[in-house]
Image (tube, rainbow, N blue to C red; front, side):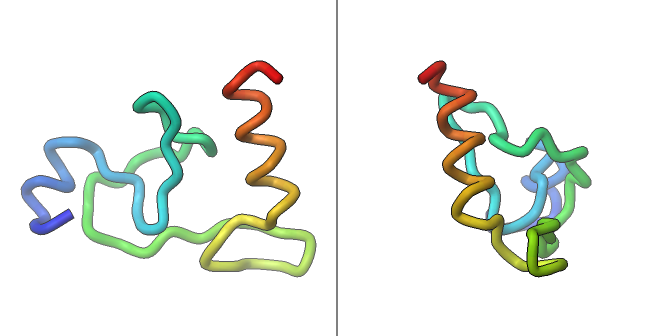
Length: 64
């Protein structure tokens, strides 16, 4: 994402964001701004989702 205007136009959910087929794996309430994203993990707040959370989200989205 290069600019605030583009982030707002596409309702960017912060970085890092994980998409599959154009859908946010974690259904964030997009802020539409250039920002960092936080995830709640078993260890607390993190800048990335836990491996188990990411795996679960991928499986749910892909139907496997």
